[in-house]
Image (cartoon, rainbow over all chains, first blue to last red; front, side, top):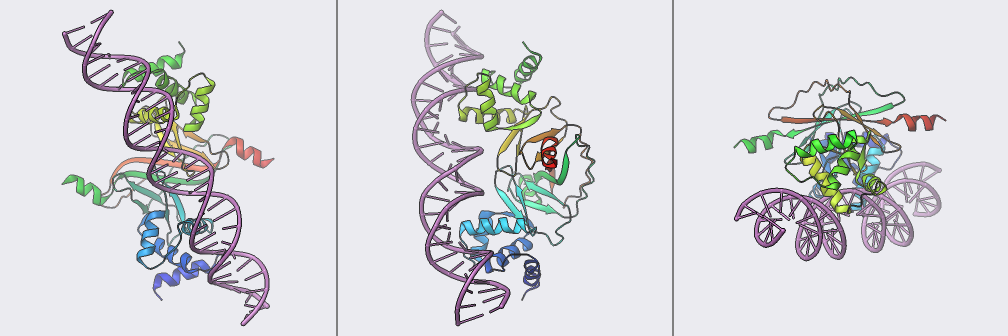
Length: 144
Length: 144
DNA sequence: GCCTACTTGCCATATAATTGCAAGTTTAGC
DNA sequence: GCTAAACTTGCAATTATATGGCAAGTAGGC
């Protein structure tokens, strides 16, 4: 059993739901990816690694992972939801969305030292910071 | 001519495109609204104020306004795009998305004093900060 | 091993948004 | 003013992402 698989199993065992091959594999894929992945990307990646899951099941699996706090969901400007999971789950972090290749990277080391003065009565729950620009790959391509 | 209409006219005159009743009215509505509005909300509001625009035209009008830098577009977690226009256009500001009523508020006074350490090669273009939680109205309702 | 509740797969469906094209309207040149 | 070109609008059809319902399958406790 790989290091990641053990980690994934451990995470899944702390949930209420059942441990199924799909959930295992999807969470593993999410943990291994440096970027947030869309439903389609995950579906294709899963197929390549031998997991055949129905489109709807994948949607439900991802929703479930988010619900369990094991993954989180980012909706891009292209209206596509992307998912990621991080080793340090509760660590607040920002995202970087590349305008060119549409990939979404997680910036784990970011310090969201933002000062907020919310209007009266507003209750803050979560802070999402998304940076847009070009990733290393794409800004390199454009420079040539 | 109202104060806002004059302001809107002035803004539109600085674009390349033509000044049409729909563009005028939509930009006016956006400027007057404290919250970012979805396509549907704008369509209904426009109808109420006597402007009948085709659904597609409204989409194109909004796209055009964004293109001209007169409005900007926020995609919510519900995959719905919302639009807003601000008097101080280039002022960086954050958004507050209410989890309950789905409204998106612009927080004009926010100071995005965020410290970023981007990976090598990444080029930053824009910073989007979205706070989620409950707006004054909704957190009040829930408390009762 | 068996039962029950949870998961999955397949069907159909919802919803936001986009594309193509013809008709209408504004602007510019004459 | 008249005409042509460019821009804008409206309508029909289509795309793409995601969701809902229900029967079949499967994990996990006993």
